[in-house]
Length: 149
Image 1 (cartoon, rainbow, N blue to C red):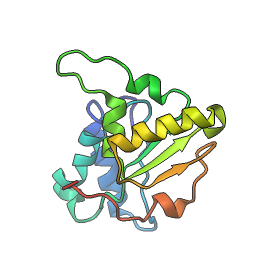
Image 2: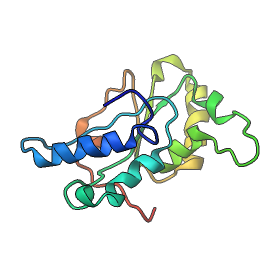
Image 3: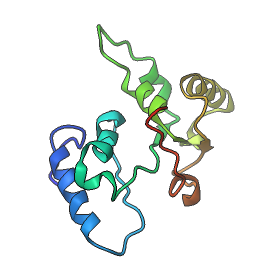
């Protein structure tokens, strides 16, 4: 894929790449990683808006990795007008949440962040980690995505 945002500028490239993968055999999962504060909504929508992918590929889960050291800073960012806090949006969309970099915050900071995250998304299973070490069974093959949620 070309460099760019998979939510918008290279979205068609992503769909084309996924369609090619669907025609191949021999893979169990496709993991798409976005960096930074990408909006998961438009990315997730390609799995039910693209006819070629609709029945061949299912969105298993949206996994959000939280940087425990800087997440509160992003959550506290003031937005103007109709702007949405992307950090909060990622947490809200998550089917699984990984609170990473636990070794970089105090127990008190961890608890404050945990309460804030649970206030945004009380339903998603949450895993606390260092170096994003979590069991793959916790985040892959979990059939957690629900469009209605």
